Image 1 (cartoon, rainbow, N blue to C red):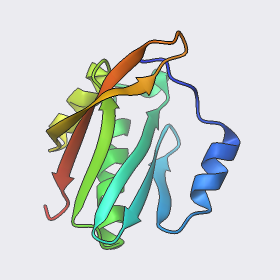
Image 2 (cartoon, rainbow, N blue to C red; image 1 turned 60 degrees about the horizontal axis):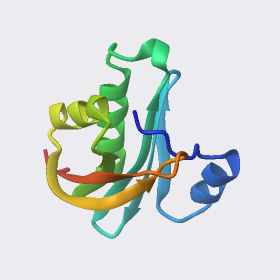
Image 3 (cartoon, rainbow, N blue to C red; image 1 turned 60 degrees about the vertical axis):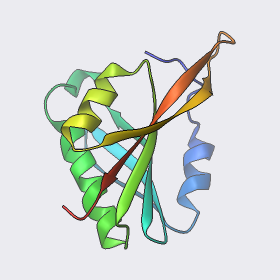
Length: 125
């Protein structure tokens, strides 16, 4: 798994204060997203490790899709580490497709860098 700098409470508070930013989820999983015009960005999705592989992530992702669509988005995109196979598999099961790659996108705590996959999905479904 990719070890990047963890988001702080201030990071979340700053994002939630911006127009178009929203959070969805349940007790064990949440997603933070942003809608601008007709496009949504999945900023992060987190599931408590004790509740992974039980459908929480998929339900949270579905809630993200629904909320983004209600806010006017027609498509959504995200970046995910090429090393995060669990997240990539979740996104693919939910209909996301790889549309590109960002070289050296993630800067890890040990000083190394990791590429990101760019994925997108229509929200018309």
